[in-house]
Image 1: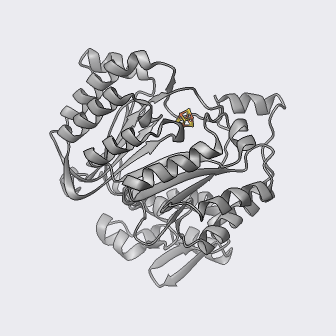
Image 2: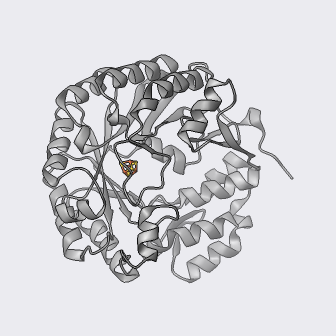
Length: 383
Ligand code: SF4
């Protein structure tokens, strides 16, 4: 089997840092999170510094700090965290530095601190502007807090993204349209929308199994997704990836890197990285991660060397999420894998089903209907 040549793979120019702390765990969340464990923050700061120190100050063009809730840190801890990050990376002049934030944590002082350290993009976990939906989702903020947080961030940081969830239990299409209508009145440059999923291990999963919560019907979910496409486009957002909508020039460069198959460093509990043809994932448990870092062990729980064919297939599968699609000729020249041939049957099948189109001879993209079946197409391309 042919393995990806490490020396042929450029060093990553992107990094992800996972901050696992949250005030409480929302019922639908299956991220690597610790709730109400602020006693671990000092240990985390030492561990993350140590893990990042091993990278040897790489130069990066995009940095994404996610979680968890990075803005859950108090001012002193946030300051320490930001200083560590700045010391452990060389941020290129045009570096996009995104940070996830919770509306309830936003204060002018915190935003000023983020801005002063170089954070230039905030991704706010708004999820909804409807109080009943926020309660169902077990979010801690009110619609007013969300609106005020967006405005407070936008006063200092131009690039403001919000996450919105649809298909929450009991939500109607009209409820979702009301959420979308609020967006156009806010200084937001990017919107990510996700249908609620019931993940195994979450309290929502158990509640659904007990009949306490019910999922939206598939047709309702499709109507809501189409409403987002329609209404965000009217509001001036360009649909550039299955779940992502951006104003001109505000596409998330970090996420584009993932979808284009570029490598990235990652640190923190549960963080996944792709460096020199190897995919690695850190231990998901924050306490295990901390113990391993403190005893000088590797935080890595899983490692996999990616073959060249796997790499090419993954690039196609992730790339097809982008509304503009994938240039198979570029993909072949960059990976050496003749993907158009290798996946010829599944590409032709998907075209005949009306799910894929070929705008150019070597280019594939999802059709309007295919956008609803992106996961199916992706798994076909993975083989
Ligand atoms: S705030 Fe976000 S990361 Fe934290 S528990 Fe809720 S959904 Fe999960």
